[in-house]
Image (cartoon, rainbow over all chains, first blue to last red):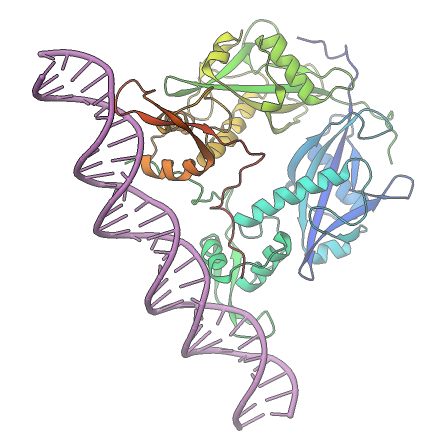
Length: 225
Length: 225
DNA sequence: CCCAGTTTGCGCGGAAGTGCGCTAACAAGA
DNA sequence: TCTTGTTAGCGCACTTCCGCGCAAACTGGG
């Protein structure tokens, strides 16, 4: 086994992809680059003996000014091209985080609309690649599960839920199938039937049924017997 | 932005979870610990300015004695508990790799049968946790796609393919549904109809239709219009 | 106050998927 | 050679799912 001291080691960055939904579209919250120019994902280097999630928490506090549980962020990937940062050998642990629009508005970060699988302007370092991977991952989640990143802050109607999913996926969805796939993972708030859309027939209000990990029965191969 | 030199940085390990299928069961290939005692996943620390996949390639060559393209290995996760290695501050990038039985037999590693979501004996460091995560990830792949880790080396019949999937999932599968889900992602070898099972009616022989990334139409929400 | 516009919830006919079971095609043993 | 056992492929009846369209329940404007 190698000795721990025989080799240099890379600096580890925790980079965050903070997403939010507003006006029927997906937005990513970006920070300015180190010299004040350019756009980049909010991130920072790890402090000694800290976990990467701790770095995420510090990014949220220092760069975004938000007091949010970092466990809502999920691990996206490790980006380790040695040329990704011209300042030296670094690797980046990237995390995705979904924020309700109100929380995103409270942050010090700049909301930029998502276009296709990225944003209009190029990002610094390899952050364009990280953003693209984040969008892929989040979109796959929103094909299967109701608002897994928590863009909705409170109870919601199926119409509101569908609007969020359409914003994430960038395409209009079929109403009936959407209802039938999502409803088993929602808990209706009994008695609470509200007209939250402003117009049209009042709709049932739901919250997401909290579960450690939902599994999609449609992907499961039927077992014998 | 932080200076790159202001903080110490962790040593980065590339840890591999090499899996294989034999005798209707799943096996993991393990190495002995640094002092010759205990069992651990094969891994090593990164050399300067190298990518993690390069570390995986070195593990395959040095620890397993196999000359295999590391791109077949895929990202599993980042394991960063500062206490995971008593020798110091380390983080581990874990990869999963599927090997055909013949390649696994050629390696210098020790094949240990998988029981449930781990192995009988405890593993060193946090490698039990890594193995468990690897099994979760691989099992989800085998619910959806034909032999994505490449346990089968050559062409195969649907029966052989199903045996592999049953070994990975640890449960018998329903024959018809399995065929109907997998067949669209397979390419039949025309003219080649072989009795590969040894007994019973000869079956059509297939190879996996190579595609950058298969997407499961059953998880996709129907679009409007 | 009434009518036009909008959205929800659900019933219904058609389409797609599911699992059983039959037959074909082989090996092995008597 | 004939019988038994095993597996592959597929037809078929049955169930589930899908998307259309209608009625209900609201807002807002005239």
